[in-house]
Image (cartoon, rainbow, N blue to C red; front, side, top):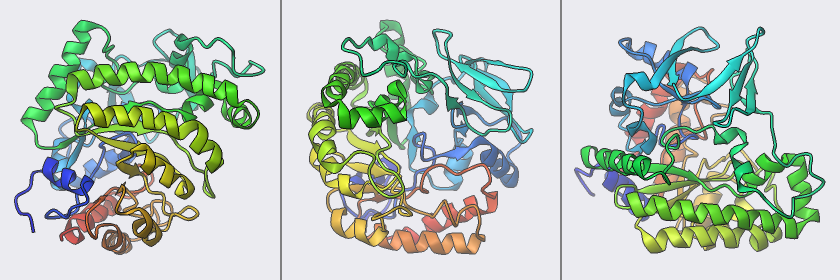
Length: 418
């Protein structure tokens, strides 16, 4: 048994499929392992944290950064690199949430509010790309650059990629890393986080392929494109890859020694199975993932983390062949994604990052004791032999009682020892 591991070492051991002193725990390491700001405010109130406002860094999903006091309490081992940025109070402004509680949001976020209280979110070109009705907890996409086109255009303008909902960034992507001055700040800030903490550092790079197609064309059109216009889809993906490879080169040139995981994203699954038929996925998408992930592994010691919701059982072999190191959120409530099955078939080849509690049926609806039992059972399955990092299945939603959040992390720490 390994004693006195740092968080960074503990996570590294899990990613290398080794048992450390305990299962590592993630809370807010990226935009799908965190917590709704409403739920976080309720948690802070329960914990007696009153001297400052929470920071809602992700406006689209209304997510808060877990602060050091909470990370320490819950023995958290992972941190979002974005937490190191916007350190000045003047970088933030006050915002009122749906339940009337207050938080701070990044000052750079641009929006307008109409007389009904609907928030219209704008990108840095002033285009409205999303809206949040007054009663909604999330921002919905409202503009798709190629929606009105009969097919994927022959000539694809990369400037159009900035006209989607998710181009409104969370830190550190408010910075332009191709501007030398901002690039220097990007490197310096992440290095400082690395040098002054022992967290495993996760940096979101996105590089979405399937999702980007849906954001540009809209879901219905892009699903049709995949079947009816293979050449157009490949043309679009190659244009995306061209830009992604430049971004990865720039990122890794600057911070490869300070970051442990690069977080990629693509929601590839429905509740019943993949959006894309496995053969098409293997032919069109997998080789392009491999191109990016091979580059990461060839040029750095960073691990490749992929977030994909849904039932992706049929795609996991292709993702492993392409070089993925960790899969999240491990949505075990979907078809073919049972804990035992995943661990038995793929546990030696990929680290499962998530799947730690049933967020659909347990976390918001059951008692703290039932939450703890669910966590215990899942850790006993996933944690054996390493290759596991604890996290809930996706973000903690606004209606989750703080007692259940506390129970979840208490159980993860209590039952995660080897």
